[in-house]
Length: 251
Picture (cartoon, rainbow, N blue to C red):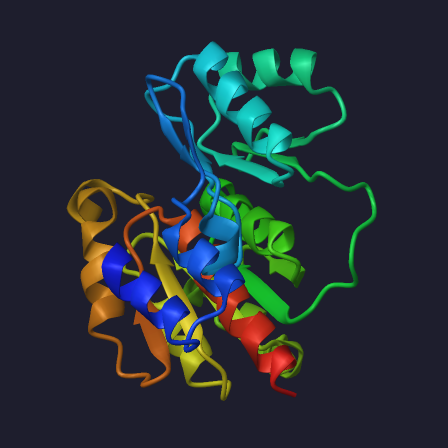
């Protein structure tokens, strides 16, 4: 909307001064030189900007964390390497870090609201746990109740079948698998909720670092299965939380 049009609407009484100010005010942005930190994302999208730590120095990650905290934003970071984790632990000792999932979580307030929405995270194997923890920690940071069920792949189908009733209590299920990627389709056939499938780069040569699992999941016969990228635990956890929270907001 152009400035002149906004001013004309104010003059005609069709727009209040406060509304015009909101439209004319630029979205808050912190220019750190190496990063443009979006401080308006929580208002637009419901959750603050998340720090993707790959390719950043420990000092750069620290700077972004401080900028978010200065703006009163909760701070969540993914793909935190060992050097970054040690650096952040020194400067923010009260933050929650998960070295398995490579995540960092530092909310502004120590008071946690009651969880809203139930997300189940399910892995085919123990080797999928790093990506599963990333998904689970993301959904938790977004305010959902999260349960984790590990190592229930199709090589022993009875392992997942015995949890069918439990899975039906979830609002959304995130299912992670490498190898041939069959588990999400099996889970999808047991429940009436969305299943977000995450192919992981787990398996032998012909798994092609998760490509075989990705193709298998994309071709799942279960109609309630949707697929994210290989090892995209954050994306799966984020989508699952958005769905679960919306389900309970409309309940």
